[in-house]
Image (cartoon, rainbow, N blue to C red; front, side, top):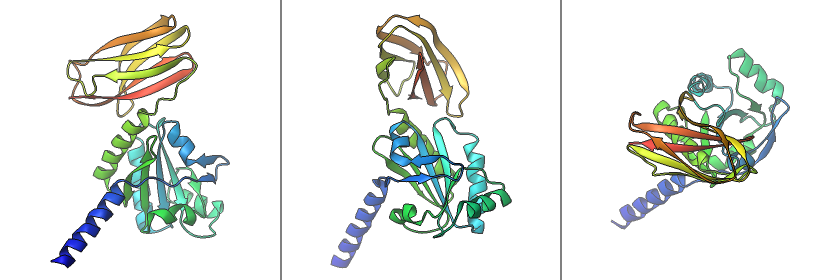
Length: 250
């Protein structure tokens, strides 16, 4: 009986630890000449998909599926990268593998140390998002679970509202909404304000405002009664600044 209790306690702890895992920060040079600083991207409202591979057949299959899935995502918000697990691998190694298999995501060679905190298994896909740098998914290719994780990570990323010169204090309420909601924010200076609604594939659904306003507190009603239940994105552009927030209709 004690053995059962200890085993159950360990499994509960392990499950909780996996569900609440946060990412480990890193900065790495990409093979396209750019660099990736993980926490900087997350703090700026991006969802990051880290796809660890070592050239295996299942890596190729999962990579093909991941790229197909990526085509349906908010690609301004979600960023995907291949990281080669093989110690000592070079950009030439990774790029040759990508080209020969028709894969396109930016890549990082020699990524063993980056993958080490997350365990093993090939391929290993991580989906990370939000100001708390949460790992929403860790595992092999699973279309349903990955879609759920991308949606959750995008919602978390959209809640990262960085104040700008043009606007601050952005909020959508109520959320979730049934027949109506509203978006409120402070316009810090006279600006052209564009407010649009998108579905999760990035398709524009509706425009709520596109005109100039003086600085001050602004509120815009959102009639949701004619929209289908589901998740949407509200984009608010003021001057050169853009904020995107999730809206759930149920």
